Length: 159
Picture: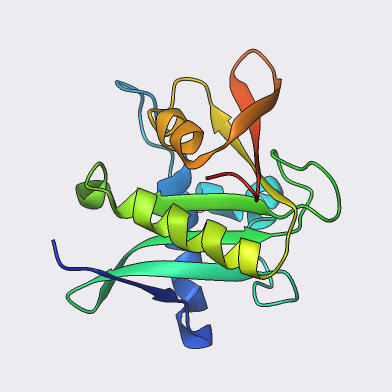
């Protein structure tokens, strides 16, 4: 598949709510929540006012259409570690999952964060989410867990 990974343009920030919605893990057989769920304050943390210092986003483009996004910001979210560690969110439109685009997006963001000299990046992921494997492969390790989710960190000297 022919695709391009690039930094998001400011006029494209309005796609972030769609990718935030796509980032919500829906267990097999469960009903999808309404798209308005992204308006909840705990989810708005990921996108509201995007574009400040320490907000970075890359998108995957196929035939000039944005089909995936990975973004980070320092925020008090589910994966929060400290005020120097950006939290990461990543998602793809469903038909583009499991094709290597997520890995390419993740690699681009980790390389970028290393160049910006961040020490680490964190995320939160449900234990049942198939993406846990991708995160481990990218160098993320579990630093905390509760009944349903992992908090994972990638030290940016990871491979």
